[in-house]
Image 1 (cartoon, rainbow, N blue to C red):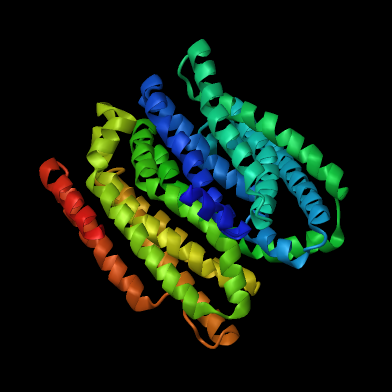
Image 2: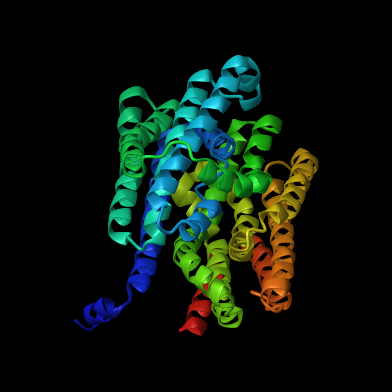
Length: 462
């Protein structure tokens, strides 16, 4: 009764923050829980094909949507507070036009792209369909988060998270454990959810083309496309290069280990959804100092979760992938450490979006992506796919430091030099993470010591 009373007394912002976090946990949690099922029903080669498809899908989505549903849309929700329906409808129209143009280009040069993507034509067509539909759901979800409408968003998100694996499992049971069946299940659910949302948003906003809205979105969005593309290269480029240089079986091993290493994102994604409106309000008030205290505390929590995940990584590989994925365990520590720097980057991007200084994104993002490609080209050839985990960590460190410098310069001009997170603190956390990587890697086969360390950490925390 006491807990219920406290919940009812919370502000709508606090309730939304709580439910967005829970929703993110459930969404990604359901996705991760079903991984062991698919890794056992599908061969490593088929699972590798599915992993490559997801990597190329993220790159295609950037080209067809310019990621206008991300930071640009959050800004527009504040700028066009009384025209949100019209703006959303117009953005949906712009996304459809861009997707159509990219698809027309593919149709004229399909043979070339099928060779580059190393995927059958049927999968590429499904990829375009998913890229066409998914932005509508992202626009709608962003609007719900910005207006703290958590109830319906939680329902739709959980429905999608449950239906994706169920539809794929039904198709796999009927037609066999192929990557195509897995993909068909996901795209089918997207059609059922996104088409009604597209119709609803067009009917409500009644805008397809708007010179003002399109111009605003393109003016801010186009300069940061290289930034988003660089981020995808950092996140997904490893899989594509492993596919080209080693094989799809190794893509499956790396992809599974990467997914496990990114489990910390379960916490971070929900936290970021809750933090975004709060951070915008703090930046608007110029209250950077109080925000810094919260962000540094949350950073320590993220590091603690990442190190704990490193220590139990051998068991997680067996649970999620079965013994045939055992060797992938060596990828997990550097990938888990990378999550902290992803968290830092997401935080440091806020002032750049708020003050519309997005052109600076490109410099640090492209630099980190180019370094990632070069390091992968050198070290995957020499040490195999495990090297990609360490090149990813190096590049995310460079990525975060670049955005730290840019945000610092912006806040020096706009906010009297207040820093969101100090460089000394980032270096301190970096040392902790590297120590965690080394210790967890050395102790992979000594489970007693690993669990003793986890137990000690829990005692300290209590």
